[in-house]
Length: 438
Image (cartoon, rainbow, N blue to C red; front, side, top):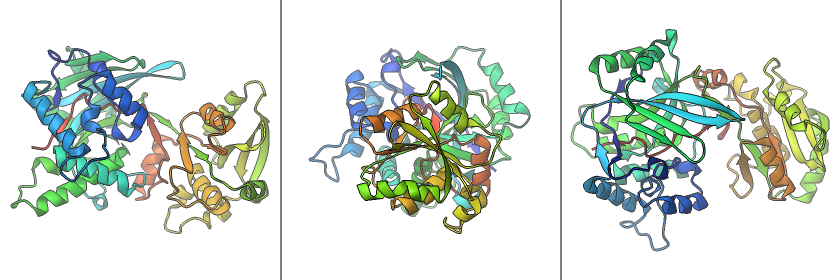
């Protein structure tokens, strides 16, 4: 099913750029204006200038952040800041990070994957997308003709065949090894032996891939492929734009950490807030937990990560002063009737679906495309509560993390979860290795 190819990766020339930790950056979708400024200051060669450059008030159709990204990429290639590997390779990437006081390693392989339309079910999505970020990535693709950051996709390593092939590769010296100030570490190896590449590609060839992070980038790459074909002479089907760069991670990788994007809400009228408790009681059993109770956050964590029950559970903060409210859905069948009919029963039983459709849309009157000025997200329950206490938002709804097998089941059913249902932690960095399409 999935067709995997090696690539001639583009990466920083470590003879000119010694501090790689100072030049890699997060992917575009988590670069805030403040972080962008910090990355610009961190190094004159920081990859943010390619991945997510500054927009200026005087930007035009011919001089804008995308054209400047492309100019920067070409200039750094000419100056030798970037180098292109001579031999096609599949890159082994070990990403070390800390989470809740424990170190994890997430192992991925960076490769090119043939683009497939969604309906072929070769590459399977699990979340919806928005037009604005799709258009942003498409504009960057046209300007730079490069995949500047990898899509994170998941696969099933049946019999641990891929894993066993990779273990032998880590015995050699990595081509990239760096430690960042945030406690993250990266080791990257280039696998160039044709026999090993063939074995890895063959092990992945008979199964679908599941997009974990990078839905907008994948859809942009599909659109770019269609547009390039429309304005090109008859193509072979093996052009560079027929492929996209991905980092592939095994579903069972112990470093695959999925955090829940807790919902933060503001801009709600006093009348709506006053009526909310009574409305909630018509759908949920409600239990109160005093915020000053010893180990309250451990109780919340235990409650939201329990897997032995299929009940829908949410935690709400901000409605009752000094208290967390545990919401347990009373009647899933009744709630399901209030969701769009075309979604699967699995979708309708997700905590995030009940929250988005029943509470946010029906009870609070928010549309599914509510502006960022109304809806916010946090990946830490205590942080979400603090943003209520600081009066940045009015309500915080805490969710359970979605398990990898549920993501696979949703994608296999041809369904998509509500947008921002998952957060794969940490994000893959941009700038370690990237892929030119020329």
